Structures are given as structure tokens and as C-alpha cells.
Length: 509
Image 1 (tube, rainbow, N blue to C red):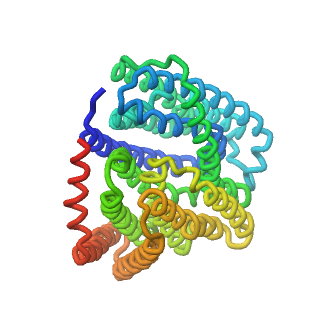
Image 2 (cartoon, rainbow, N blue to C red):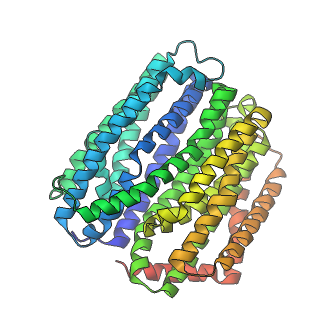
Image 3 (cartoon, rainbow, N blue to C red):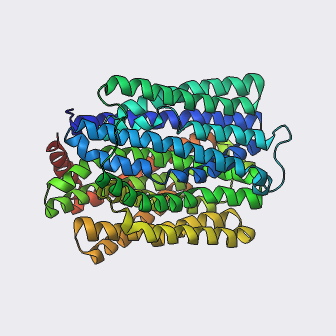
């Protein structure tokens, strides 16, 4: 099956952005309606159960990513039988994983009260609500969910984005009706379950139409089994560590500080996660082209390509962080009111964590996953997750949410980001590691200066409400980008990016 890398990457990027807009705006509206009609505790319940079930989902152990990695070669060579056998293996794995999630999830039910400090809303049975969330997680591995991998490996992520966006719109409309007319949170979560089932059905129907010759049958050969086992060993532990870092914070907050606090904190992380989602779309859209370029070009050309895409990651991370620091509190004041806001210290920490997460994800998604170097970053991931958990448990009693965010920030800034960069420079680019660390330090300091300058200018705005927010937004859009434009122009980075990156991508059409 022939396909254009550049065309598909462009379509994936465009519809990925549209999907992220859908997944940002519509759930944001739902969250507003939930808080206004039911209260912030209900938003806290959602954050808690999503975090618990995210940890349960590590039973997937990276099988999906391992099979995806093994699919790239047969897809490139149009080896249909091998593609079908790998798809069949993934189907069986997903069904097993779904069963494991259901069993472990049920076994955790007696311990639910221990995860909530204080009490839950009086009209909510936490066991029933958790059961619906559990069924939703279980159903995501059933049916035809495994076929979504075909859209990825054939670079037709645009189809996947269209399916998810359409289902999200239907879900959010139904949830709004359930909240406004019935004010029933059970109905809201039932809409989530129904949307998951609908999504897997649509994935099966559309994938069959787009890839009629690809069906799940046959057995994978012993060599492929060995590759998958080796990859799963590392990916499983990667999944465990990454999930603990991202999900344990909400569980600790709920267990020690209550649902109201996790609901308020969730408002802040919702915004940063939504922005990060847009960045991840960019990374996902260019990853296949980077992967192809790595195996078809020289070391010198790979270093040049890295210079281009790394600079774009720095630009995006710095600009978005400047916006978060300067706009978080004015926006929260308009959205949920001063009573539901956290301190500016939390804003600084959450925004700083966002920056290091953006830079880390660039190396993880675009290079480490693409080159299959999970084994090289395993130990740092495990160490980071353990340190994050220890910092959370030690600090939450003394400095609350500040300690929780501080743990995540330190693990990314001091462990994950620098070590991921070192692995890429050592094993992929084969370039000077000292130069990489100096570059990381310089870019971090430069980003801090730009963010601080933007915040100082925004602090001069005395207007409140939407007018003040608009004026601050105008500063955030202009000042960081002017700084970065001047820097890139002086160093020649922008010229390199616009000319070289287009050229190297065009080669892979």
C-alpha cells in the first residue's frame, strides 16, 4: 500500500489540531457546567478515578507500542501476512488486558474510602460511580480498539482524529443535557461509557473500509515474538513509571487533602494538559518522518535535522510557558472565582513543570520511541517515579499542593529531561554530550528570562475581567515570539529551520 509521508503527516497534524481543539473546548464546557451545577467535589471525583484507572492500565505493559514498532517495517515493505498476524496478536493481547483491568479494578473497590480524605458528595455512591468508570476502561480494550494502530502505522492518524472528535462532540452534547436537565452525575459518566463503546465500533467499521485486505489472522514468527517480549520488558516498566508520575499526584492529594482540593488543582492541570496535548500533536505528526530520516540519512544530516526540530520544541515550550505564567490566575479568576484558586507559587511550579515536560516529550516521542531506545532510559524513569512518590508523601502534609507539584518538577528537570537528551545524543546523534548539556542549560536560562520579562510586562496591566485578560494575552503572544524571533535570526536558526527542515521532509514524500 503506497502512501505519501508528507501528505499524511500534514493531514494528521491538521486533524490532530482540530481534535485537540474539540477535546479542549468541549470538556472545558462540561467541567464548567459540572462545577456550577453540582460542585467542585464532582470534578475531584473524576480526577481521582481517572488517575486510579490510569494506573490499572499499565497492565497493557506497552504491548501496543511494541507491536506498533514491529509493524513499521512490514508496512513499509507491504508484507500483508505479517501485518495481519501482528494485528491478530494485538487483538488477543487487548482482550487479556481488558480482563486484567476488570479483575484488578474490582479487587480495589473495598479500598476506595481510603483514597478520599473527608467525605464524598452525599448523593453519590462511590462504588457505583467507580464501577461505571471501570467498565469504561474495560470497554476501551474490547471490540475493535486494537485496529486504531493501523491508522498510526499507515500515517492515517487523521482518520483516527476524525473518529475521536465526532464521538467527543456527541458525548459532550449528551453530558450537557444530563447536567442541565437532570443534574445527574451518573448520567454524565454513563455518556462517557457509551462514547467509548461507540468509538471502538466506529474504529472497527472504518478500518475495515480503509484497509479491506488487513484482517486479524495468523501467528507471528518466533523472531517477532522475541522482539516484542524484549520491547515489552522495557515498555512495561516505562509505562509503570510514567503513569505513577502523572497519576499518583491526584491520588495523594485526594487521600490527604480531599476531593475539593483535587478538583481545584485539576482545573490548573486541565489547562496545562490541554496545551501539552496540542504540542504532542505536533510531535506525533513529525515522528514518522524523523524515524524514516534516521535510517536513510547520514549522521551529519541527522544532527542538522535535530537542530531544526529541537529549536521548534524550545520555541513552543517557551512561548506556552510564558502564556501559562502570565494568564493562569486572571483566567482562573474569571472561570471559577477567587475562592477556587491556588497560590501563584503553584502557578510557577505547574508552568515550570509544563516546560520541562514539553522538552522531555520531544526527545521521548520523536527520538527515543522512534529509535526503540526504551532500554536506555528505563532506569532513570524508574528512579524518577520513586523519587516523585517519596517527595509527594513527605511534603503533602507540610506544604500541600506545592509539595506535590515540586516533586513532579524536580523529577523532570533534574532526571528525565537531561538524561533523555543524553541518550539521544549518545546513541542516535552520536554527538558531544557536554555540548548537549550546555545547550540545555542555556535554553532553560533563556526561557526563564523570556517568561519573566513577559510576566513583568503583564503585571503592568491594571484592568480586570475580560479586558485585562485580553491585554495580557496580547503581550503573551507578541513579546515571547519577538524575543525568540530575534534570537533565531541572529543565530541563523530560523533560516536553517525554514529551509532545511522543509527540504529534508520533502525528500521523504
